[in-house]
Amino acid sequence: MSTAGNKSLVTNFWEKFSASQYDAAMELLTDDATWTVMGTTALSGTFSKAEFTNLLGGMGDKAPNGIQVTPNQLTAEDDRVSIEAESYGEISNGKTYKNIYHFMIVCRDGKIAKVREYLDTEHVTEIFGT
Image (tube, rainbow, N blue to C red; front, side, top):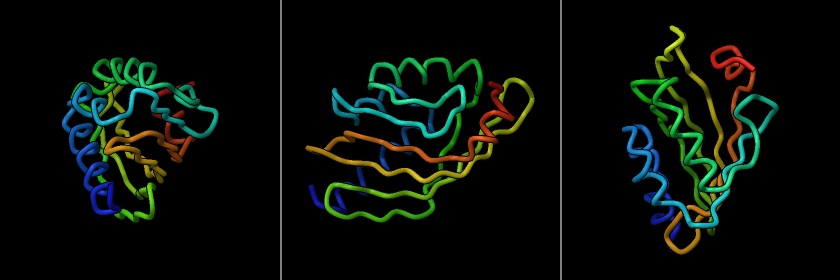
């Protein structure tokens, strides 16, 4: 796939994710995809596609209106798309989740194969707890 195609794939993923269309977003991942959330928060670790899907399944209770992720800058080279993004979500505990990210995404055969997510871990702990 071309770098433009990879950027389009990644943009499409975040559009579906931000609309809380998690099943449709997960369809854009390869079956063996991994998602790594950096840091030592309660949400950190490396997840398989199935594990990450389960993690998203609990999102409805924590963020009933979902979490919108807005990519601000995308850069693509070879099979990789690098994104700077920010999020917004109203959390059921009354707090507002507004984080900043860098995602390094590897694409393969028209799908997302690997995501490495870098974010403000202190903000995650502040909003979601330990």
